[in-house]
Image (cartoon, rainbow, N blue to C red; front, side, top):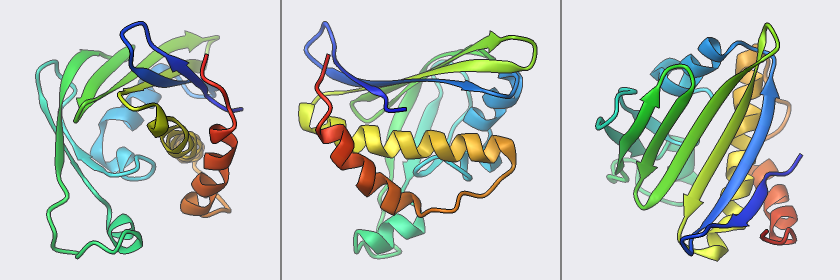
Amino acid sequence: MLGDLVATDDGRFAVRFERVLDHPPQKVWRALTEPGHLAAWFPVLVEFHAVAGAALRFELKPEAKRRFDIAEDEDTASYGEVIAADPPRLLEYTWGNEILRWELQPHGDTACRLVFTNVFDERDTGAPAAAGWHVALDLLTAALDGREVPWSPWDRADELTAQYAATPYR
């Protein structure tokens, strides 16, 4: 299920995903905020505390540095700030100029609905961003389920980029 590419009211763009996860909001919250869990699915290494106003630090993973031919010791850090944190319902933060918003709502007795929105400035960012987050959410689901994925996240993102490039903005 592809995410939705949308034009925002303020002239920016976004990709939005909605997924039902077979895990309670508290467990999903831990996967969104705790370093050990984030390392299993988030596209980069990230350090932060889920408290409004807290700083975030993002760093490319070694595999990304290899793929992009970046020296292992090169500093690729970028930064953000937590805008809102209401455990286990809402987490919103910046990553450079982008906004990432994670909303969790109970769905029945043991599941939750995850709504994830990534807001960015450039229309052309949409397809690769959507593909990357699509893969990240698939990895998040697998990590929560305790299973490995049988595919390369990099190859899967390349496949999905073409699909998202053919998807019109709403």
